[in-house]
Length: 94
Image (cartoon, rainbow, N blue to C red; front, side):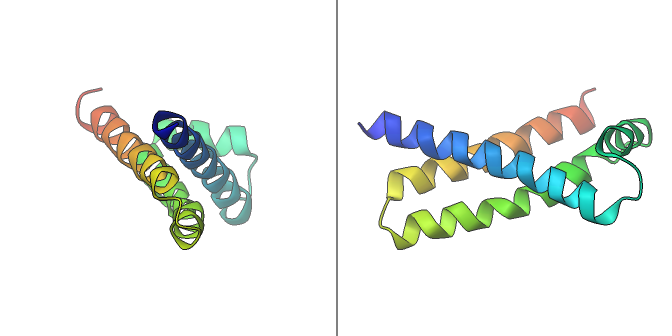
């Protein structure tokens, strides 16, 4: 049951991060989502866009903590850390 709760939080965290990237590109870009992400890759600022998208993870994290669903909140935190490590690998290794 605990692993399932962490997995649910992890998936929620990833979904919130993807939604944050989509909201960010939709609000602050005049081009479409595809063009904005392609430009981010070409001009090497994709990590910044993903990091700004991760801000949306605060919402499910806070809700899970308020509902005393600590393992779900751990999953969201794990998703945030995973995305941060992936961005660091992308930025410094690739």
